[in-house]
Image (cartoon, rainbow, N blue to C red):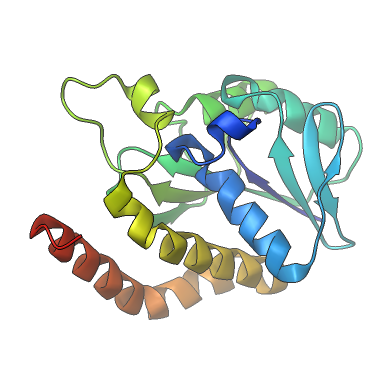
Length: 200
């Protein structure tokens, strides 16, 4: 069984913040597929015979507690974590087979609780904060009005990639993204150019 976790914070106050793009992708895909999340104490989930979608409800810094709980209930062959990355430009998407937490508290918690960094990562860029802006405040802020114009494109494309992962696996996902990255990047670059010229 594949486990796909989207990271975020529970509660309506956090719903549209940068830190919650992982939740956004899972919510979008589940709506497209007509799936309904069920609630457990530490997480919300959708269970299929081949995959498990997970939204930790422990707040970002304690995300790993949800994974520990899931591991006692399901046999997981492979894990993919979707999360926001402030080191990437807004809308940029990248993947990794494994690696360090890179300063992301949600990943730190997962690695500490599972005792491994051997899980796949789906990184969605949220852009960097201003020089005088605290990172913790930035990730808990909402996207700008300009970014909101392109955010649906980011989420829908990410959900498409996730759907392919569920159907075909990680290598197929990488191959598809490699072939379609140019088209997506051109849309993103057009948005960035329009934004820089004050057109949005």
